[in-house]
Length: 201
Image (cartoon, rainbow, N blue to C red; front, side, top):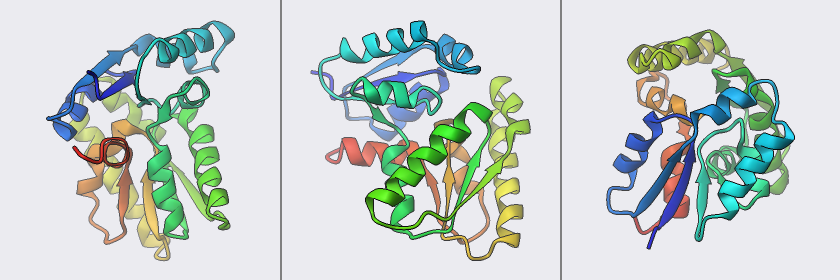
């Protein structure tokens, strides 16, 4: 029996979750076209496809794409960044939310504010776009992508020493967490989501 079904919009995430949950039975579905189609908003046809994909699955579903996360959640999936946002809210803030794709910004911030609200805390969020770096990920140069994200975060933390934690808004950014030099916690969604959904693993 499948322990978890994952909906991805990038093939690279499959290896990430195989590594995070080597003993789990994972069913990983990759739909790169969904992210491309969602860049200018999710129309009714795309929303219907995502919804149908989630509802066709027996058992828990994890959507690893922030951009389509709200639609997947409405259909019954868990958004990969929800456990991470809950952890960020528990710090009390201020939270530095870093993102590399414009379509991620609004849904990520809304979810983070929801997490603060559910914990009856005032949200103090600083957004930090690094959208110029997305081309590295798109070109498959993940090493440069991660390195440049970390450099950007370290630079931002110098000017915001009161930051309680850093949130990497996209699952694709997770590799940058270990490269940040500052002593502020850097939260990445894949590992936190796996711990939440597959605690035994």
